[in-house]
Image (cartoon, rainbow, N blue to C red; front, top):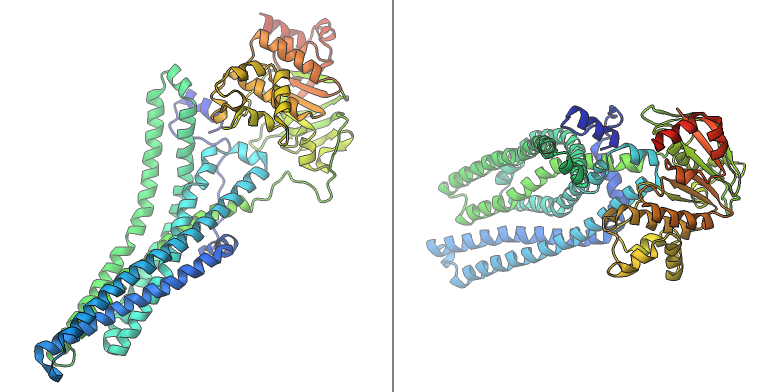
Amino acid sequence: MPRRAISSCMRTGCSTPRRETPIKSEPAPAAPQRSLWRLFKAHFWPHRAWFFGGTALALLTALWGIGYVAALDYVGNSLQAQMTGEGGGAPAGWIWSGIIAIILLTAGRSLSMYGMTLLNNTGVQRGLVSIQTVQYDALISGDYARISADASGSFVSRFISDVISIREAALRFANNFTKSLATVVGVLIWLFWKDWQLALIIAVVYPLALGPVVSLGNSVRKRAKRSAEQTGEVTSLLSEGFQSARVVKAFGLEGWQKARAQKGFAERSKLFLKVLSKRAGVDPVLEVFGGLALAALLGFVAWRISQGENTLGDLLGVIGAVAVAAPEVRALGSISAVAQEGAAAADRVFEIVDAAPKVADKPGALGIEAARGEIEFSDVRFAYPDGTQALKGLSFTARPGETVAFVGASGAGKSTVFNLLMRLYDADGGAVRLDGLDVRDVTGASLRGQMALVAQDSALFDDTIANNIALGKLDAARAAVETAAKAANAHEFIQAMPGGYDAPAGEMGRNLSGGQRQRVALARAILRGAPILLLDEATSALDAESEARVQEALSQFARGRTVLIIAHRLSTVRAADRIIVMEDGRAVEEGTHDTLMAKGGAYKRLVELQLS
C-alpha cells in the first residue's frame, strides 16, 4: 500500500487497502484458448521432451487400464464356464492366470502413472521458472512508475497465486488429458468390439454432461481473476502490517490492524468460495450422468443375461469399464474449469509481459562512456501519474565538479529532480540534459552508470555486508570494498560484527541500525566512483560525530565530481557551492549560504525555522 494511502487510513480508520490511483476498467480478456496456447508455446513447448516422455507413459497407462477391463471379462467368462460346465468347463488355472494378469496390469499401470507424473511435473516446473523469470524481467526492466504506483503485494501474488493456478492447469492437462482421453476412447472401442449396444449407452449419456460442465468452467474465469487480484491486496496488507509492527505497537493500533486483516481474509475467503462453488459443480454433474450410464448399462446387461445373450464376463467387463472410465471422464470434465483459472492467471502474466514501457531507449540512443558532469534543467515541467504537479518550470545548471544543494519544504519537488535526472520518469515539458545531451537521447543504462545514489531509505539486500557494498561495482575486489567502507566511516562497525564483512545485512538491512545502513549505502556509492553523486538525505540518520566523519569523507570523494544534495540539515548544505531553494515545483532562490542569508528571503526563513 502506498505511504499516502497508509496515512489516509490512519486518519479515517479505513479497513481495506486503498490504491494511490483509481482502478481503471480493464478490457475484456482474450479468449482462454489464445492465452493458454500462447503460454504453452512460449514457456512449455521448449521443454517438450519431458512432456513427450509423459505422453508416452500416459498412453501406456491407458493401455494397462483397458487390459484390466479385458482381464475382468476373461475371468468372469472363465468363472461362468466352470460353474455351468459349458464347453467342458474352464480349467482353474485359467481363472488364476486371469487374476494374476489383473495384478500385473494394476502394478504396471501404477508404475507408468508414477513415471508419467514425474516427467510431466518436471516439464511443468521448468516452464513455470520461465514464466516467473519473464515476468520479473519485465517488471524490473520496465517503468519505475509502474512498480512504485502499485502495492507490492499485487506483484508478489503474481509470482505465487497466479503461478499456482497455471501450474494446476498445466499439471491437470499434462497428467490427465492424454491418459484420460486414451482410456475413455480405448474403453469405448473395447465395448464397441464387445457389444456395440452397450457402448452406445455410454456414448450417448456422457456427452450430455458436456454442456453444463463447459458452462461451469466459463463462469470460473472472471471470478478467478478477481480472486487473484484480491490475493495481492491481502499480501500487501500482511507485508505492510509486519513491516509497520513498531508503529502499530507504539500507537496501540493492534485492534485496528486486526480488523483490517480480518476483513481482507473474509473477502479473500468469499471470492475463493465463489470460484470453488463453480469448480465443485463439475464432479456432481459428471457423477449424475455417470450414475445414469452405469444404471442403464447394468439394467441392459442384466436383461440380456436373463435372455441368455450376455454372460457373467460381460457384466464384470462392463463394471470394470465403468470403473476405469468414470474417473477419467471426471478428470476430463474438471480440466475445463481448471483451464479457465489458468487462463485468468495467464491473462495477468501477459498484462505484465506485454506492457510497453513508456520510458525506454530510443532507436539509436547514444551511450555515455565518461560524463563530465554538467547537468541542466531547462523549464522542466512534470506531473506524476496520479496528477500531482511536481515541477512547474524548473531551470538550473550544475557545472562539472560543483556541489549544488536543494532545499525546501516537503513536496516542493526536490526528489523529482533526481527521478528525472536518472530518467526514472520523462519530463512532460522542457529538457533535462547531461553534458549538453538530452537524457531522452541516451541509453538509460549508460546514463545511470554515470551516477551514484544514496537515498534516505537506504536499500540493502538480504546478503552479506561486503556484497551489499560491492553492488556499486560488481567486479570489485574485497580490498576495494573495504577501502570504500573506510571512506564512508563504516569499516569499524563492520569489523566489530560477528563475521565482519561476511555478516548478513538481513532483509532490507534489518540487522543494522539506520545510521549503519546509510554508511553501507555511502560505501556502495563511493565504490561506484561515478562522476555524479546524488545524496538524498544521505546523512539524516547519522549522529553528529558520524556525520562529521562522513562529510569529511564525502568532501574528499566529491573532488572533481558533480554532487547534487537534497537535505534539510543546515550542516549538510551550508558548504555547498550553490543552494537552490524550491517552492511549489520552482526555484525561487539560488546562491551560497551567506548570500542567501543576507538576502533574507525563503532560505533564511527555512534556516530560522530549523534553528528555532
